[in-house]
Length: 220
Image (cartoon, rainbow, N blue to C red; front, side, top):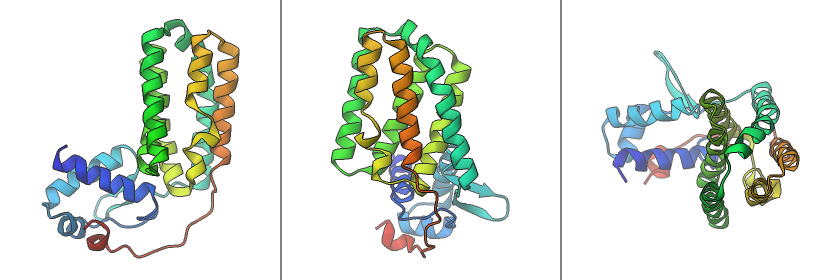
C-alpha cells in the first residue's frame, strides 16, 4: 500500500468515525507535520477526498470536512430510493452465477468489517456493493450517477450516521443476491427500496458538538 493510500485511509477513517467532525478545517501544514510528509502529498489526499465529497476545498480558504445540510442529506437518500430499485430489471437481465459469487464475496468483506468494528471500511464496502451492482445493468451513465450518490450518502452517514447505518439492521445484502439468483425482480425491487428507506431512517440529522482536533495526536 502506497504512502498516499495509507494517509487517505487514515483520514477517511477519522472522518467517518467522527474523530474529525463536519466543518473542521484541514490545514495542510498541520497534516503534513502529523504524517511526516510534504504538503504536496497531503494536497493529493485532500483532492481525492474532495472528489468523493468528504472534503470541500475553497480557494484562499483551504480544505475542511464537508458538512452536508439536512436538506441535502434527505435529498441524496430520496434520490437513491427512487433510482436504485428501477435498475433491478436491467441488473437481472445480466445476472449470472459468476456475478452472484462475486457479490457474495463482497458481502463477506462487509460482514468482516462490521464484525471488526471498522465503520470506515464498512461504509466504503456497502457503497461499493451498490454502485458495482448498478454497473451490472450496463447503463454507464446511470451507474456513474449511482456511484456519486453513494459517495454523497457515505458522507451523510459519516456526518450523521450510527453503527446501525452500516450493519445488518438495515438489511443483509445477501438477501438481495438470493432474490436475483431466483430472478424475483419485483421482490428484489421491494427489498432494495425497503433497504434504502431503513438506511435513511437510521440517520440522525442533528448537529454534532464542535470539537478541537489535535492532528498530531490523532495521526501518531
